[in-house]
Each structure stands twice: as structure tokens, then as C-alpha cells.
Length: 204
Length: 222
Image (cartoon, rainbow over all chains, first blue to last red; front, side, top):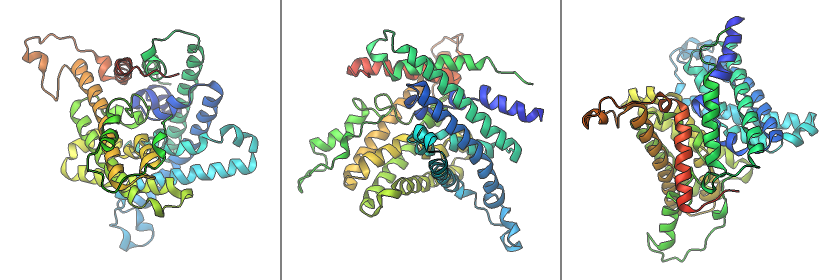
């Protein structure tokens, strides 16, 4: 249990998707102008990451890996489908996002109204695909993959909320013309990354 | 955030030369005045992580240029046959197949580089520049124009990440392409800064590049 909690903390703070790997930067920069919308996107990312990481883990282990297809029959024991990894993962993510969108629309129109436009955006959020690819690269088991997905989502959520809060305050300050918008946001992200670095070495 | 102003199809005369003024503008605009990274804020996601050293960055930029040109060409060729409702999935499938090609090619011919780049080759799929240009340009324009647009955008993207990588490697590891330049010019005690090897350095360098470029262009974001 301790390892799982450690992994969540590690992926949320030390290995933060945004600050350590630059993943999900596009939506991180584009949707961080207001705290309320950032909140919606962050929650949706947590949800999708927590679901797609174990889902893609199952696909990797049972279909894509070399010899993984042997459960069908012995003649499939040498089939290696790893080259289909990218296509499969992006298909799973895109269809999962579509599915989530339909479910939310059906059962909670109010939540759908507030998330609406950000849901389809998640399909091209690199932190989702990155989560799945890292999980394969680091040889996680199913439990760890789920924890890693959740932790990474949590890290993205914290980062985007914090940046949105800073940018709301930033409206009232005088920024040099060339730095307005993206420039100052990049510098801010750098400083926030520095702050997140202080968690290095923390374990439970 | 991307400006989708080129969306309208421009009427072209039949006898336009291969590099007419309009086409030259398609090619050159994204290099500076309409740079995908610094002005349109696209594609920062996947590639900054490889900019610690110059060499992987060169491989990464070449891969993006390749994927971008061919995905634009293919999308533009089949643009009339794609139903609007499923166009994102079709575009993603085209991009994903090309990225798989790049990734298999690297695995076969430069395995060490493949190890260095790791998951980031796969993440070219979610590079917003590619999907953004397919959606905004290739879906509504002829193949040759789309290829020019793709070339311009991807080179515009490449020079920014190459610049970031150059400064990060120079200040972080004191070298350029692996050559210890400071030892060569007789300054071996040059204080390298670990911050630039870290992701923080990339954010700050990119922020400064954006500042310099936008002050030069006079572009102001509201």
C-alpha cells in the first residue's frame, strides 16, 4: 500500500507531467486563464488518465506484447504487435474521451455544460498519451499503472489550478508588451517548476 | 488559440508559378511573423523535453518535418472524401501511421537515439502543430500549397526548439553537439548551470526567446 501512495505522490509532485516532462502544455497554457474552467479541465484529465492508463495496460499486456496473444492459441505465441502500440493507444484514448462525453451528456447535463468544450480537447492532450507510454516504458503492474494515472492527473490538476490563479491576479499588473500572454506564462511556469522541485526526495 | 484565418480557400489562377509571391508567403510567414510556437502557441507539449542536448533535438525536428509534410500531403489528397464528423480520427490515424514509420525507422537504424527519445517520438502524434495545420489548412487547400504550409510551419517550429536546445546544452553542459566548446577556447572552468539541464531552464529560455521575438515583431497578446 505504501508503495502505491508513494507512487501517487511521486507522479503528482516530483515527476509532474507539466513541470518535469512538458506534457499537456498546450491545454495547460490555453485553458489557464480562469480558475473555474481550469478546474473543469483538470478534473476531466484526472478522470480520463485514471481510466485510460489501466485500460491501455491491459491492451499492452494481453494484445500488443510479444507472445501476449498466446491465450488465443499456441500458434499465436510468436506474434509481436508492439508496432501497433501508438495507433491502439490513441484509438483507445479518443474513443474513451468520446464515451465519457456521451455518458456525461446523458446522465449529468449540468456537468456536461460546464465541461462541454474541454472534453474533446482531452483526446489531444499529450499528458494522456504520455501517461500510457511512460507506464509501458517503466514496466508498471496494473495497480501501479492505475496509481500512476491518477497521480499524474492530480499533478496536472494542481499545476493548472495554480497557474490559473496566478494569471487571474496577473491581469492587474504591468507586464512589458513583448512578454504579455505566453512569454510571462512561460517564465511563471519555470518558477512554479522550481517550486515543485523542492519535493524531490520526499517519500512516505 | 491558433488563428484559423487561412481557413478560406484561396482562388488560384491555373498558371501560377511554383514559387509565386503568395506561395513564398505561405512558406516564410510561419518562420517569423506567424511562428507556430512563439506566436500561435502550438506544439510546446511534446518536444521541449528533448531539448537538453542539440543532437536528439535535430532528430526530433527532422521527424516532425517529415510527419508534418507527409500528413499534410495525404490529408490534402483525401480531403474531399473525409466525412466532417470523423475527420479528427482520420487525421489522427494518418499522423499515427506516419509516426509509427518514424519510430520503427529510428529503432532500426539509430537504436541509441531511439532510447534517448523514448516515449517522445510517439508523442509527436499529439503535437498540436500537426493536427492544427491539418485542420486549419490541409483540409481546405490543394496538396502543393499544403506541403508548402507544412514545410514552413514545421521549420518554424524546428528553429525555435533548436535555439532552445543550443542554449540549454551550452549553458547546462558547456558543450555544443557534444564538443566541449569552453575547453576549446581555453576556459575550462566555465560554471555550467544545472538548472538549464532541468526542465525549468527550458521554460525560462523559451520565455526569453518569445520576449525577444515578440518585441522585434511588435506582436502584443491581449
